[in-house]
Image 1: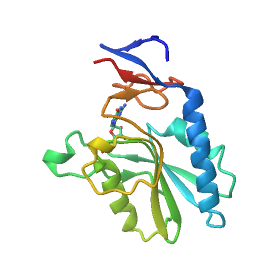
Image 2 (image 1 turned 180 degrees about the vertical axis):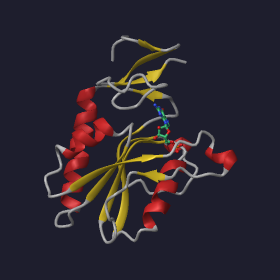
Image 3 (image 1 turned 45 degrees about the horizontal axis):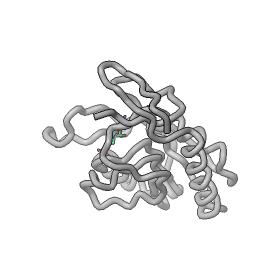
Image 4 (image 1 turned 90 degrees about the vertical axis):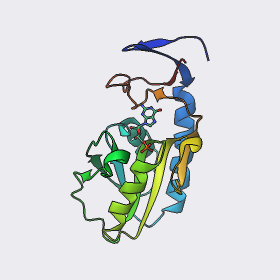
Length: 180
Ligand code: 5GP
């Protein structure tokens, strides 16, 4: 890593994971999924916006027949205190009896994925698993099985490769972490 820092809005970020390492880790994940889902025609559900680059690079490397759809989650700022859950938007595919793999950018507390899995399970899929680009294990507040993880990271705020800071940074090829 060099010291090539960037500024987004009012915050400084330093390089953390270069594109080459990200792609190598995603390739490994794609190989594993291709092996484990052979003959199952999995349906990938990519959660927008953050997972768009991850989804594209993963799907290019999946070698078995598969499908992809894109969903969004309604944005409730304060899920915990309001008790509201983020509702799935844009799911037009029938997932009944399908093998579903949710694609997430990052799992932090796990609230988002936990709620999403519950909503998907109610539609009687054959199976639901989660593939996340990043996981912050120290932050997890749910007993979650995130089956496929490209990389686990410490509790630092990161941007780039689809992840944003107040709208900026999604276009960056590498992942950066906040300079504290
Ligand atoms: P969770 O519900 O697991 O706490 O949060 C998941 C969501 O929070 C992610 O999909 C992402 O939008 C956001 N998030 C969590 N940690 C980070 C981070 O380090 N950087 C960015 N850009 N977003 C994050």
